[in-house]
Length: 176
Image (cartoon, rainbow, N blue to C red):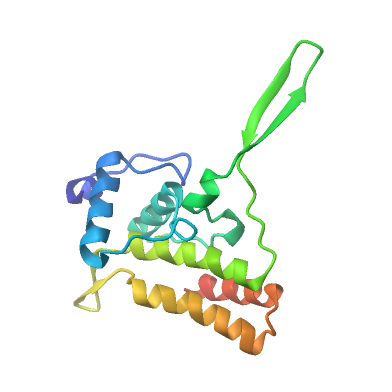
């Protein structure tokens, strides 16, 4: 895994494209060794999300991902919509669309955020040098504290408003 990280990386067209199998297995083993935690499928990040966050951390080019694009294992298990477009009487295009994650309340937003911060902790499970000392890139406790604090602040200061939570979360993650 260290050799692969040090090697020049190839361009990946889709940022959510899964990491190589050997890398995923090594990172999963590191996660289980450190945390010994099996996540609930509702908040367990999909392979695509884990891969995206891992690549962003390694490149040090993080993006602010909309929570409606955060996919958990359970989101991927739901049936895909199938759409069809008729180009002529004899030609039809059929394609699958990923299920849309509907966020209708602050609590649903919180669970999407929990999925995202689990991906942060999974991808940030390595040591880095900062100000001359070795630190973990992103630990699980601060990640969970961010999601919990966002919901708590939403209830206390935002009156439970989904719009308030979304706005402040995006601004906060943008600054991070």
